[in-house]
Amino acid sequence: MSDVISAAAPRRCGLVAVLGAPNVGKSTLVNRLVGAKVTIVSPKVQTTRTRITGIAVDGAVQMIFVDTPGIFAPKRRLDRAMVEAAWRSAADADLVLLLVDAKRGVDEDSQRIVAGLKERKIATTLVLNKVDLVNKTVLLKLAAVLNQSGDFADTFMVSAETGDGVVEVKRHILAGLPEGPWLYPDDQLTDLSERLLAAEITREQVFRQLHEEVPYAIAVETEKWEEFKDGSARVDQVIYVQRDGHKKIVIGEKGQRIKAIGAAARAELANILGRNIHLFLHVKVAADWSERREFYRMWGLEFDA
Image 1 (cartoon, rainbow, N blue to C red):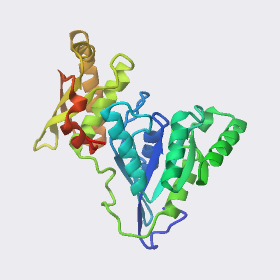
Image 2: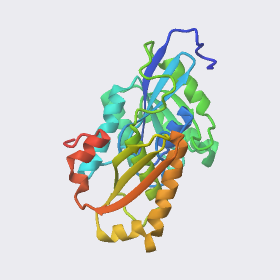
Image 3: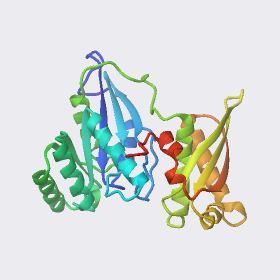
Image 4: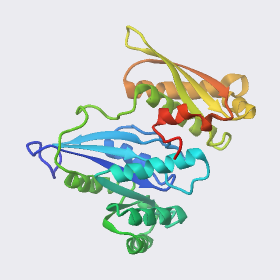
């Protein structure tokens, strides 16, 4: 139970948007705050494509965390859609956290986000991440620079990876959310459907296992979900790639790579859902998948952003 809000207090509920440049640790922080894995984590930039919601309850407070796509200078339709989704989340939120990679410092993306928040007059809390990798003098200087250029009510220093400092951020969130009824059951961790969650888990394994071999432009779709009486489920998915050469890489020699991706995704999904999953993966070439409206609709993104 929280030491800030007691269970006897009036219920509170609010949306907490986590903003930042690509690959600053937003997904890791959201998973840490929720206390369970609700959004995929990858060393690749721009991993998160849609607004992933993680839900946590502490005492009388329900916190609804939104892991947003990284904000950067968009070049393609998908880029524009992701950046638009992130800004939309910030505008809708009761509390906004701007996560900055302390090791990376103030880069162009961070400057762009700080300016955007100021222009939109969005009240924001600054969170410096990966502070375990930077000495204190550099941290204090970085915090001063960011506070000078932006308008932040509070500043926190954390390591989302280790959990250091995250409790203080959570206390800040608990105290800042408005009174209101809870929007989700108290045992629900995410608003993602099982089909979309399964697709995200597989996409994570593609990123993790192929590293730099296959470009960022892949998509995973759950085509079929069949429930069985014993509680298990058969899940059929398609991994879309843009070139024949990419298809060969994903499948691997004698199908070994696709088997490894499937085994890891199956185990991860079974662990999250608490039941057996029979996962079947197929790879298709679709050079224009990033220009298809159905993918944007599936991810909750605006096609014409």
